[in-house]
Length: 186
Image 1: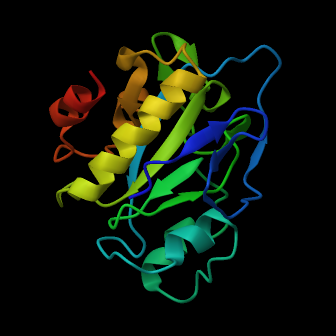
Image 2: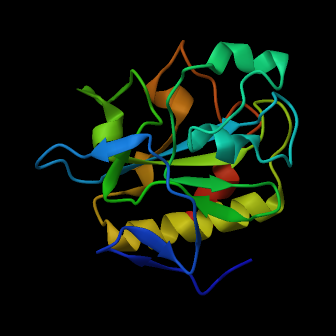
């Protein structure tokens, strides 16, 4: 685990870090402040861990003919700011200052288009397989750094994808331990 991480607020990058630039982002709208973190869960192929498929997907390089499950995501252009693998490794795809395409159709507390004002963090996992301790450690560390860099992110504005897209998304899933995470952030 890397505890010497910091956020470069000019570049929008986690340093030191593994940065794999994704083309799936754009500029945040003028005046859009960063005031929310959205926690996601992803595995590619579904239920399998450890391949480079997530990175390839977020970078627009996934060979969608390589697995039958990928047919559903062919032509989909998404990314997140960060991925935290099951080992705790962190990969950044989009600078925090840019708008990653992670939330899709979404709203929170009456405000739509959550990509405009949020940071998306993907955890390698599924809705029903417990996340690893290393992921909770890294997630809580990164959230603490993000809250220092972007003070408008209050504890009640750390949410799951399911919270901003109910009925459409379920991640990070019922197995995700929100109480444990919130305790580490207190």
